[in-house]
Length: 426
Length: 144
Image 1 (cartoon, one colour):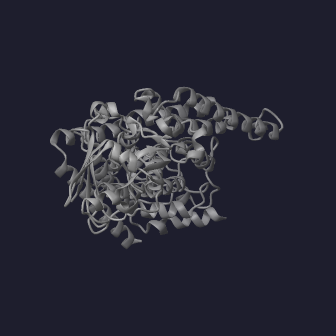
Image 2 (cartoon, rainbow over the protein chains, first blue to last red):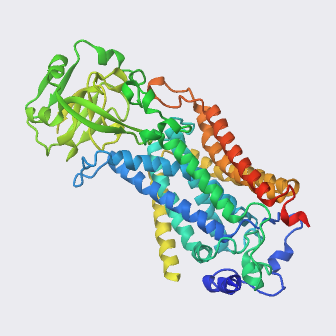
């Protein structure tokens, strides 16, 4: 019987590294007998290291993907001079940020299920056994707190909701290292349990209660040839299946904001491309940016600064806007929309001012006093970028950046500066 | 395994300390205090409020709902709770933004009700099929 083999093997996985009283006989550990009568006791047989290890593997994968795609986004915001952003694939940022938000969103309920599966661990007796144990508990508290705050504030940002009064960009960035560092440390601490959990059939693993398996004479690994624990209610496999179904349902009803064909079933989609003006959502309206008057002023001009500075009037631009291209506009908040753009080729404008495709360009918006009222561009994106006058065959509207906006492939939406007033060839 | 544990623990500690030190360097004091409050509150709300409620609900079911039906009820509740967790902030935030942003324009309360209805319906069908297959209203393991 396999369970016998497992029963005699868990000590091998752990290699005597944890615990100090793993008697396999009826003799119970001191810790279990001295605890107060009122101390909580968990009798459910559903929780198991075998279940937790699988949930943890799913969650760890989601956090890892979320972290890497998040780093890519932060790199968009502050690229290194020697490694400019590529211009292709044009859907690169759309894909990575769609994945970032989808994995982050699904990680929220998954995190709760994972924490549920180890909740009895909070009730070990005595609560603190040694300095090492205290340190471990402290690092787990940091992991739990930082992970909960990271995924929830990330989600709030997607909802354009800022109940927290701090700079989202820096906290989300640096806290991500705290989360990932704590996850790696946690994996290191729990590695024997993880290996045991993943290698044991989910129905057969030790029951996880407030008593550590190696102090519990009745635990599967200690008691010898016993049949797998009976789960009278939902089985462990059932928990995994239901969790998978929950993740799938959240994912499929929310990614419609990124994957256009899924918009009709997007019951939990934050954005709806089809409801945006000219078929594209907006993140900052002209009213929010307080540019209504400046953007519609009759004497609006585009100033181009560089070795040969010049000025373009609106009529000049509209007459010359003949270059068409199609790229998605993609937001760090996960939504994106493919669109047809028409306008001036940025490189033509840059060359006339004395620049080349190797120049560094700075774009300035009419908007005042917002950190993203300007952006910079260098490298491959420069050769394909447009100064757009038209969006989906219509004159671009005010909320999308009238009279003129920047749009480039594989570039974060917020860096495609709207309501342009000035372009500098640096 | 020992070297893996050591490597993971070392790298993890360094990465985490890097993040924490950057927060300390880059954030003004009032932001740091707020972040700390949120971190502590997250743990307290989760471990002290939410989890006991879930454990309480679970033990209530254990006491009052027969095993066979409980399996389906628990599965439906897991899926339903996961969806609800995501939907609640959306319901709270719907209609707060300018329409041209095309954000949060749906009636998420109705959408959540629809999703929960589908989950409940499918689970009920699965349960009825189970009862029919068992051939009686009395589960086989309790039949004797």
